[in-house]
Length: 188
Length: 265
Image (cartoon, rainbow over all chains, first blue to last red; front, side, top):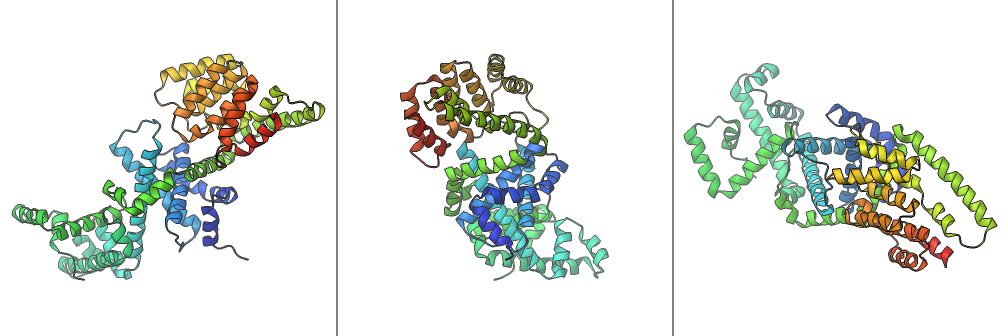
């Protein structure tokens, strides 16, 4: 019988060492190279792996969920985001490697988890838009000027583009607000 | 549901005139709906531009969901999960594999020797029991993580591995004196070094520090204290601390504690 990614997720949540090992062997090389290519070292990569896995399990324990893509791919995204978050934090605070108290660490991991959930919600909703909207918004969010978008996509004027983008963004806003998960994290 | 107010876009893109901006900001102060809309649009800009990570407001920690997550992260279960993951990482770490195998090899041969001698001498021999339980190979290495390893610590571990325990304790003492952020594993190494030197009070002091370090390693304290008492042949103390370990099945080395208690009784 084929073991699905969601079966694997279930086993993973039990803290089964064998399953953790499988995930490490399959997934860690990619995570490691992402971290090393982005100002991190070996120890950072290991830290990210550990935290992402605990996060995944904590989320599942709080509320069960299913993975739409593959477990490995999904886990990789979580790791990438955790590392981006870490880099963002380092910009503001100079971290010394002092031992963080357990409570402080738990608090930080909680924040990271909720931020990740928000990120996922936003990405999921963007995916639900039409291809045209997605394309326009991606350019908009990358801060490409309206007039460049006009040229690139062959619109008639700035105003048409502006109006299209507003419409797409309104749709996206509505989708996000309509989702029950948004109410739980909107304070974030 | 109606569209969000379009002036938010003008405000965020910086295309408002100074007077428009003032009017808008004044409105923000009284209109909480508008303020919420602005926050969402701002969050969207931050999340979708894919550059910076959007850090949330800590206010959310007061919600039920956050409380649930936080209590999981603080639980012993999460702590043991972390140690399992770390075990997997260190067992599979490519650059330390040779060393791990070497340790396992030594430990295995000691284990074989000891099980042989246990057949020969039926009486409990505390020194042998100590040797069979100390498992130096189980202590994660101090120096394999990253390039910028601490030099004193590296030296201390090498001395320890060479069984130059006196010199090792001197190096660990130097490290503890110099550093403010101390790797809790160093207490374990140093404590064992003192135990090997039969300096039991010093050893117990190291494990006391380990217990107070408030780290994932702290929960190992009782087991290491047990090893000190075992080598010291203080049966009463040993029994007490083993009983403490046995009070909770999730305690570090629960099974070994049970086994050891059976052997000394």
